[in-house]
Length: 81
Image 1 (cartoon, rainbow, N blue to C red):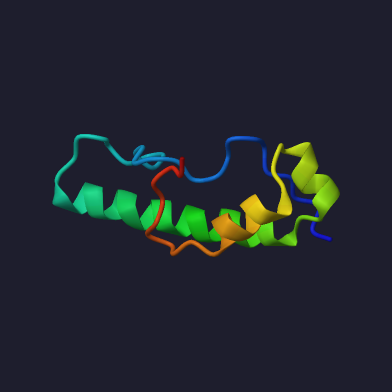
Image 2: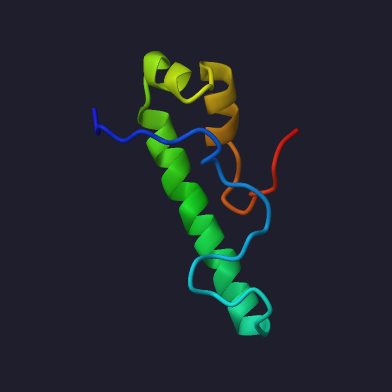
């Protein structure tokens, strides 16, 4: 087991600017922000896939929610309701 724990609410949310990228930048900054959000989504979903049921319970999630999040496409970073 990797020992990683994802805090509650850490699943990728909305279109917040990536750290270090100006929120009101030009096309290149928006593109870079999108690429960084996708990379973060891929990494968080990879880590989420390694968590067992007890760890998922610790962050307030269950296996079904985790599987749904893991199955999302990298560019699908909008919150699910």
